[in-house]
Length: 366
Image 1: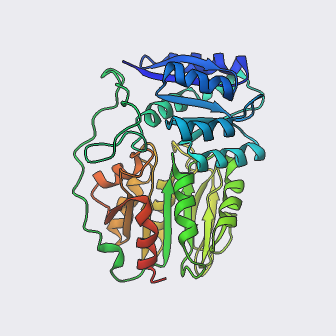
Image 2: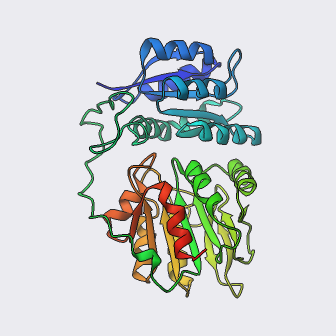
């Protein structure tokens, strides 16, 4: 049995292109395509897919209206297909708030080269989201809307090593109190950050540096959106700016953000290097720079995301005495990045998303 996919897009070219990219993987099968939201709701009833890819701008019924109806009547994993524009970014963040798990960007030109470049990312996201803990709980978790699809052994990722026992959770409350907060996230991260940051009061006594894997055209609208929801000040990071307490700096897409020492309390450094990094910005690049250069106490957190970015850097931070926190599997959209850190044995506290603001506020005594 394979992962069953419904593609929803008003462009015949995009429907055909997405289907071709997906079905080149032996474990992925497009069971139907739909040209708009109304068509999509009918196809969901008829074909009962495991996951839906959903365009935003469509005639008759747009993607956001369709998404609301999916989440109300047929809750299931949804991957948005978003244009790389400011309007596309705002609509994408609305979709993530409604219940979509993640998005893939598309160029407005729909040029074949740009579409081919996202094939691997598209296939991986569909695999991970189709079996997301958000809809398919394990063991002691809740019931699932539909059975998790079976992925053939030939294409299934290798089974992870046994998880380390969950720490007691006392570490974040211990002294010394951190003077810098650093956070990394990827798939599912925009919604997770939107849940965490508004719970922090304006008197957060430290700067916060965040790497969220996201296209360059999305990071400023994302920072602006968070700033409108939060008591702390949230902004897209700029080269050379000094770090200020109570301010959250979002790494710009397409470039690495690191900690710099050109200001008495530290500053933002932006650089395309290392070019070899799988992600840009990279959580590991930020965390490793903090481990190397920062002389105060650090609190580092890893939230939901695919892959292992951040685990190596968190391990180095822990060796330098940092407090460390990871989101638990039960609330992750994809338990990849947190699990990689847990498997390295460098996490003090493993907590569901709903508990993380409390851990932070208790640690900073705010």
